[in-house]
Image 1 (cartoon, protein in one colour):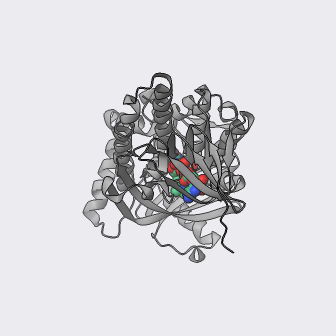
Image 2: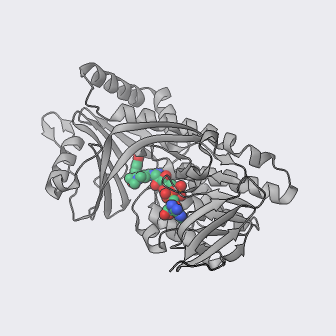
Image 3: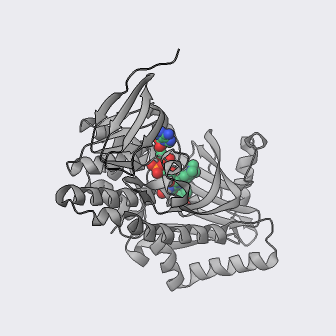
Length: 403
Ligand code: RFL
Ligand code: PHB
């Protein structure tokens, strides 16, 4: 039976689509500025909090989270890393980020951050509509934009002053903008990452990025007892062809170190808790705004995970958006809002370049010949042996200050 119910109409100042890190943090930052918002999310809270994704937070991300009152557990449980290792030709080379730049990174799971942000929204009385179906947006080229969705089968509408599209790469906000208004920049890499989460003590205190003849591998972690590992695989890799034993052996091969003829690095093995394949893509849409719709985070740009930047970029976007919306609320001056896209894109492109560069330096491509491999090794030697090149790496990896 078709339903002809009138939608329930709710009013708020900023309607946010997507309760990922971008959407929840934006809602939190707006609350601190006294601006009311509602978040509309298609998934359940539990799903968002169990999804294994990012692990590395830049210094400025940590500083912002702490300054805005959601960093208590992060400060207690996050693992601060002052250095990172690049491993190639069987040898590890440590880059001391703190010594080179005065900045460090913190390892803290995105799912943990999601819990902290969701708790902060609840304790401030914030409204997040989880499991909202069929969300759509309209009238964002007028002063009265609307988000519509269904909750428990009932049609609802949020009338707001602004919409923030924080609904990730596959969301509905970006595709709602007339196609002719956007320019898309995209690069798809001919490989993926097979990632596992294992109940095993990390074999090293710091992250290891390994470039091996057989492909890239990364050792990261979530805690002192949980290791997060990745290995370069085919873009359309079939997980069924990767039983646990094969994954561990391939990882061991790519991380192996040799002093003389002795293989002397061992990963700690343990039960594999989660397995998945991630596609590798660079993507930017310009501009990041249209009328009263502002895109933030993965909805506007994707980076390959090699530089550990996606979540950090999402945080930088919403920090700029919250500031621009707060400025408008206080002064009725639109200038920061008008410059939102331009402000964000400067960082976005700098981070795109770094993520692309790190990806191309560390991965193996099928068309690579011996010349390409020698060139990669020369580049890795340059980054690890020249203080100037190591500083360039460390500055970008530990992250730029927020504006
Ligand atoms: P998200 O996290 O995708 O959240 C978008 C939210 O919008 C919801 N949504 C909708 N809601 C309502 N209606 C609709 N029609 C909707 N469509 C979608 C979704 O359900 C979701 O809840 O985007 P956001 O907030 O912009 O955050 C971006 C980050 O999640 C992402 O950039 C990072 O995870 C990327 N990333 C990393 N970033 C880092 O900074 N450091 C890292 O170490 C790092 N490692 C990674 C990563 C991403 C990875 N994968 C799986 C892509 C490692 C991996 C393997
Ligand atoms: C992670 O811990 O999941 C991680 C770490 C570094 C990266 C990407 C992902 O570059």
